[in-house]
Amino acid sequence: MLTDAHTHILPDMDDGSESVEMSMQMLAQLHAQGAECVVATPHFYLHREKRAADYLQRRQARFDTLLKQQPPVELLLGAEVAIEQGISDVPELAQLAVSGTDLILLELPYAPYQSWMEAEIHAIAVQHGLTPVIAHIHRYLMWYTEEEFNTVLGWDAIFQINVEAFEGFRQNRIAREVFKRKLPFLFGSDCHNLSDRKPNFDLLRRKLKSEVLDQANRVFRQHRKG
Ligand SMILES: [Fe+2]
Image (tube, rainbow, N blue to C red; front, top):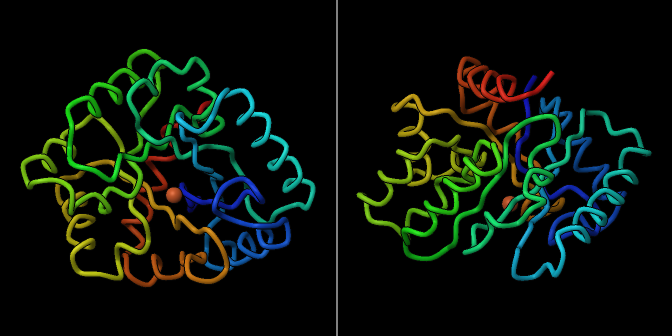
C-alpha cells in the first residue's frame, strides 16, 4: 500500500490546506497519483503550543471533518514534530505518533548541528517507545558538515524523503545515499496546497523503480500495529 507519510492536508490547521474543499482536492490528486494511504502531519511546535492537549483536540476536530467527506484513500493522523530542547518531556508525545503505528515524524532545526538534537531524539525513542522518522532528510544538508551528516544517517531512525528530492541533483544524492546504505526510508509529498506545494506523488512513480516503492511500503507495514 503506497503511503504518503508527510502531508499538511488537514484543513485550517497549519500553513497547509486552507479549507475542506482544498483538502479533498489534494486527497483526490494523491489518490490519482497512486497513494493509497495518506498521513496527515500538521506542524507541532512546542514553543507555540501552550498545551499539547489543545493541539490534539484541534487536530482531531479537523480530521473528523475531513473523514465525513469520505476521502478516497485511507487517512491516518500524525504530526510533524519540531525537534526543540525539551520536546522529549512532552507527556502526550505518543499521541503525536502516526495512528496505529509507533512512528513519529520529527523535523530537525534549520540550524547548525547541535548534540542536544540527538539526545532529544534518543529520549523520544527510549522514554516514549517510539520510532523516530527524520522528516525530509535531504533538506538539512546546507547546515551540516559531511561528518555531521554521517552522524545523522547513523541514528537508529527511519529517513523520510520528500518526492521533491528527485527533482534536483543535490538532494537526489542524499536519497541515493540512503538507498545505498540500505537505511529504512519512507516517502512523503509534504504537500501544503494546490499551487506551489501541491501533491506530486506522480513524480515518485516516474523516477523510481517499483522495488524501491515496495521497500518503503514494507517499512510502513512493519510499524503498523495489529
Ligand atoms: Fe512538512
